[in-house]
Image 1: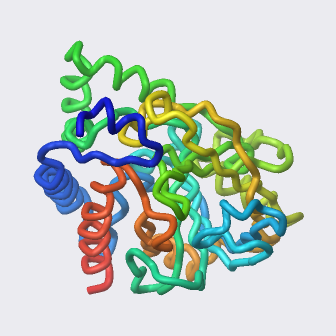
Image 2: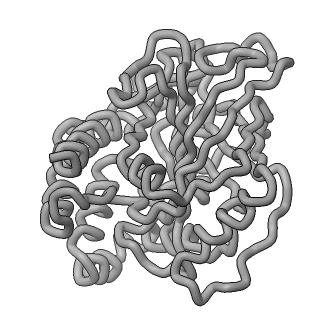
Length: 330
């Protein structure tokens, strides 16, 4: 079947050449950097190294979602306990006033059914990995390997990468994604990559949109002001998000395999997230959040991740996560 004919099918995946080899290169590059930059017991994540907080939440699916939505975790009226990790996207821990991509990782607890991969710390958990920009910087796994290699080689690697005209589109996308913010709860977060919704022809992307406006921090001299803002907000009231899905409607204009293309179909609200009023800034919860394992493949089989980037994530997240866990628990 030709690529053109494949692109006429909703929900269709088609593999790139050498995906496995490119994924292994990615793993090797990242582990080499983590060994070089961190000591055992203190090995942070490759990306999203700075955690602002790990917070308790409740994720409640709406009662009246249509029948064709009701697959996997989307059980009408079902409420899940959840842990949400909010972070800066950078590979290093830096001042919060620096423009950055921000992250929201959501872990639903005790999701019934067959899972694609189990989180060994929290079995039957279902994860969503979301960022504050609707697309990624590179469309294919082989391109993503080049980006990660440049970042892992430090300032010189980034400069050399940026000087190559073939990389300028990637550099432009990266710069567009880096924004300042005064409140992590004021941002929209997107899955970027697509997921199956039950049947082969149904593919969706996820997002979390703030349900209410919140004030930004005014004390930006504090290098951790985003954490302090979260503490201030959650000391007073809960924070609410609307969890959304977006259907693939055109396989050519809304491709599965190219995560640099923003889908233009409407967003549909399917769940409500309540981040509870709480004190999350404790040594116990901070350690728990740093050691939590998130992967798009911690998912119900009816909500399978789709596309090359997600296929690469399956092996890469598992290998890198196991490396960090072993290194930090010796």
